[in-house]
Image 1 (cartoon, rainbow, N blue to C red):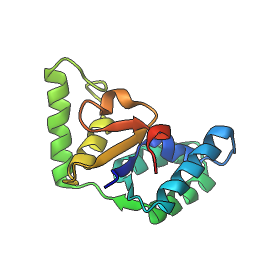
Image 2: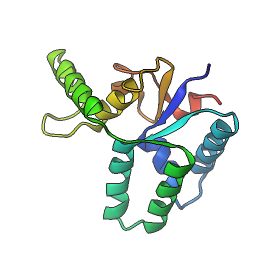
Image 3: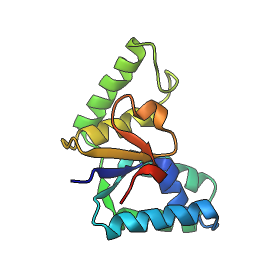
Image 4: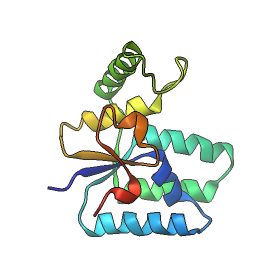
Length: 149
């Protein structure tokens, strides 16, 4: 069985981007290949929030329309109380180990993303990201280019 793919803000942002480049085109092809291969691809609500708030701030309305479409094409995973409580545990654990993943006064979306992935209850999950460091301490994470269809 191939892992379930959670999209982090890096690849999701590239998929929403209106300006075509070699990287955004490669990301679109990668996403399409995942879907074609029948992979379960998930847009986590915390990442939708993280990306959407910035798109709203910079008035990128076409990108928001694409974000909405991607959430319908892929699977959308809403936040739950279970995920948020697990995220709080991960946040505390990181600090107790002296390895925080964000400032003490931030919401720390990485911990919420990791918790969302973990609450699926499936050991075959990978987060496709542009920054493996923080996430890979808690849940499998790979650069999106390394997640094969």
